[in-house]
Amino acid sequence: MRNKLDQVDFNILNILADNAQTAYTDVAKQLTISPGTVHMRMRKMRDMGLITGATLTLDYAKMGWKMTIFLGIFLSEISLFKSVMKKLNDIEEVVKIHHVTGKYDIFIKMHARDSNHYKQVYQDEILSVAGIRGIESFISIEEKVERHIQFIELPS
Image (cartoon, rainbow, N blue to C red; front, side, top):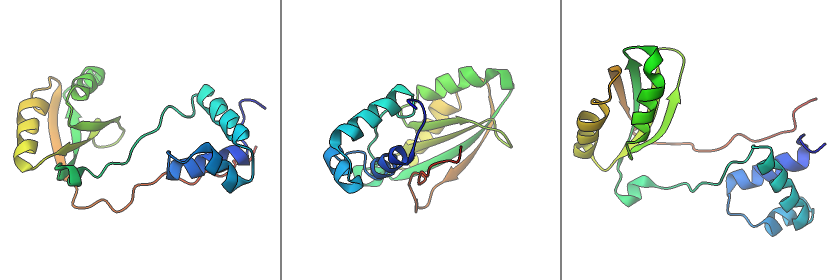
């Protein structure tokens, strides 16, 4: 079926999730299938909306961005979440925004060059967003794991 994934699709995803720059010919060799099959399967998964792009994994610290901070944000009114998320999206240091359940209304991840840069972004940009009632900050000491889940064929 065109819109159903099988083990070959999952195997392709596993290889490319580990390194999105792997050439289709190398994926094909690893799976003992043709490069054309990999290309067709990738096109199918893009058409399904399953694959929406490819990203680079960057070492921000090596580029001078030494702090990773997570912020749990409380809203003054939950109905404001779209406008708050839009304003947070405009802050270039914010790299992930999640509308969440639980203690917080929004959870974000951001990067800063140092504590002074973080203070500037926090005080001048984040705290000025209308609709934010409170914030709890969490500074990451070290990231130990960044990975995708291993994909296996799901039972029908």
